Image (cartoon, rainbow, N blue to C red; front, top):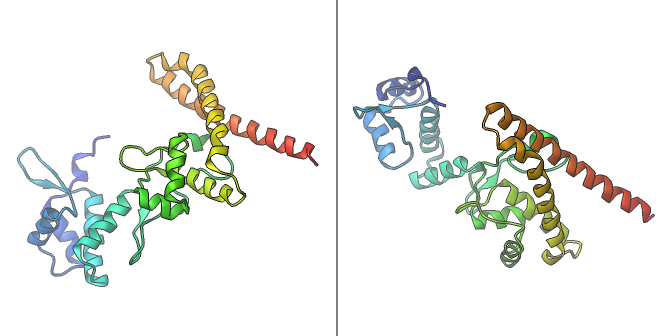
Length: 238
């Protein structure tokens, strides 16, 4: 969605808003931070910088990190990259960690959970560190199609799968035992596609919205059905 014209600030207005907390801030300093890739303001057709409120908060973060924590620009840039990827910046010698509750699917599966798109972006090392998964096990899971990167990164769904697999490994369950989970999930996805295809073929916004709603509802019901079947089967073993 387009940002309203006055949502943008000029570099002079940004300077005025920052001076109360950072008396030594200058236009040259702001331009320098831009040249270092710490901020990326948009430009007007005539070349003037235009800053959003997010740009302003990003500048505040940089300036505070320099003043209060004495962090070098490289570390600050790495921290900003982690934040942009939905992670908490790494402590010294560590790797960035996911924000609590972000982009992982756990617990009760409400329909709304299936409408969420994970914005988390993890490197391979970050996925392994935050899930406890071993590198060779990740290769195996990728071979079975249980985990796959999105582009150059792994998302929150990949992290949720990796964590679950790691915990199941504590009971002697290996990746090869989990292929049936992937097959079952693929069949459920195929069933949902069959139901919503007539809606997606219609071009109206109402049909698209209805397709998304139906998709979420059936996905939630399928998880409830699966849980009930497993619970019922286990109860019969008693």
